[in-house]
View: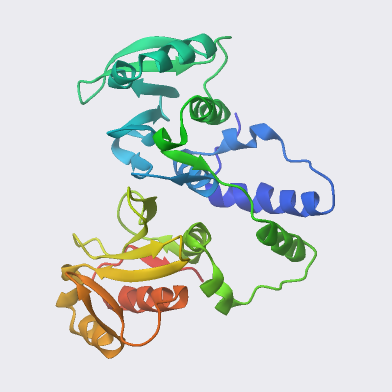
Length: 309
């Protein structure tokens, strides 16, 4: 039986070599490589390949499940993936508000009532019609199929496209020419900065994702960084993607109990509204955010992240 790989192992062994081969015109990566990813690895993969709207992809470690928002109708409806039983299911309430979608899914996949879960809700299991195994690749097929059948306004997941400049940068890196400098992180857009933060820090305590991102119903896109096991010690980075800039930072009140953090903020920032701050002079940059995160992690009592060595 194949060893289940973490996302780090998957990236190290497959993705980088794939980028090198693609840049030289040779594509050798097999489409079913994604099937080797575990729960956390698949969570990372989805966040790297899809933008989320309205809410986040969530891991429930207690049940070894991932909750994926898929359709928005007044509020989000979800796909649930059980990584223990290898089941994919959806809420029955989705089909009450979108009965045509149930008919469309049933034509493409095997759809059967799943019974009740721990929260007592009725579920419908989605499986391959040919009786084959439910895999991570099949999950992606289900996501892409549902996305192809609903309007943009109803989509909770938007597939990312590789930026031409980013691809050129990857080609330069694969050929040994590293052109991006560390201070270029200020030029990273929302999704790219999210990936940068995920790569910069590793989880050392706590459960679930410590760095999350989502897009609100309004203009804001939000990065959420959980700093400590202590409840509420978070930083929220609020973006306006239309203007390609950070509007302000939301610093939780729980962090202000640390005199060093309060003093650090008072040096360069001023209150904007409620728990939010802006710089006294100039715009907040990605590098400013990284500097604050690094400093805060050194100060808080029980950090859940640390900078990778």
